[in-house]
Image (cartoon, rainbow over all chains, first blue to last red; front, side):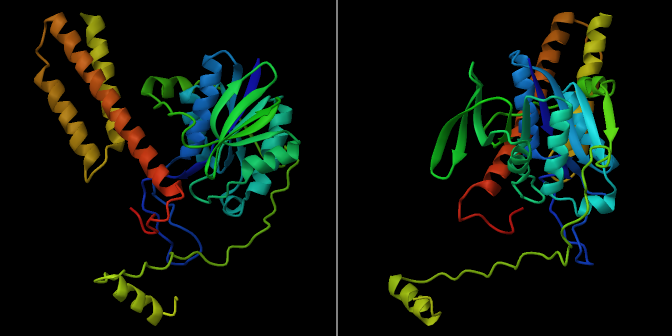
Length: 253
Length: 92
């Protein structure tokens, strides 16, 4: 039965109003509520659903990050993952960690753990990269099903419905494969208190990128982080002629 | 009777836990106080049938709160990641 590797990321909670640090080198994270990336919750839920349908045997939840990343691994375990792997990096390393690094880490783990499926969220709500699943598939040379709206296991492999511009696309892939979860794939379950308590007993292995032979040297440098420009106020016009006049005056037409 | 008692305590703990994320200004404090008061109000209830009915009511409430959180998150993420050009850059 399939072994599923699910990647989860600890991000600033979706409901928090993000503020830029006065030093303009990042956003305020101290004392700010963090939780699992919403798309990763959907990825975990899909893995758990596969296990409930007896299409998957074991779910391994992975997170790459500093010590606090263990919180989201615990949440994944509470939702139904069987064991966790925490790939620990220092806070300084983490600030400059990119999908190119994470994808190599996930690929190595997928091979070490003999995973048949890697399921990730389509993008993280903090960096909005939308790269990790695609890069992981490339490193592994596995087929990828991104922006999954529906995943079905068939005898030949997987039938996946994807959300694309203008509609839905159905593709078939073999296993092993890398999938990325989109919003409508499923509705994640809420981790209940008893499940969270039970999750504390599930194994959580700690490794470093070095153990996996992955170089996490930064490839970028953060120059500055700034607020987006304030939206200019709109103006109401009386009729179409006034609109055209205004557009002409503004040099737009 | 002791079986029901532990069920009531479990439900109380669950509702208190759920209340942590309740939206609104002082949402968690207000919600948790309301739960506390509702349980206190019924603390002298001894009829097992009535207790079972109250437990069902409490579990229904828990499901409603979970649905609230789920919908709120879905709608926010949907709004932010839809291709709608009317999206506000400075939303929430």
